[in-house]
Length: 78
Image (cartoon, rainbow, N blue to C red; front, side):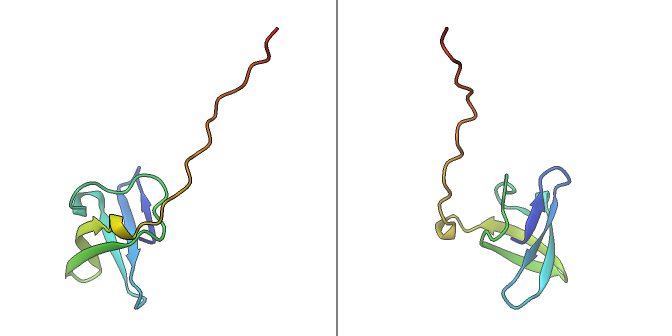
């Protein structure tokens, strides 16, 4: 994945050979990615030139990300 905008429901997949393909939220087999997705490996087919369909995230190849820090505010005891 090059990028995917959750609000608009569209994005771009860039292949290693330099070709780019548009992707829509409805084109994902399971569900579109949520959050940062740049660099996530995917598989897809393309029946229309420049458009990716049957897009699937390759969960086995995704590097593990660190957990987000808690945003709790520590209150001083009085």
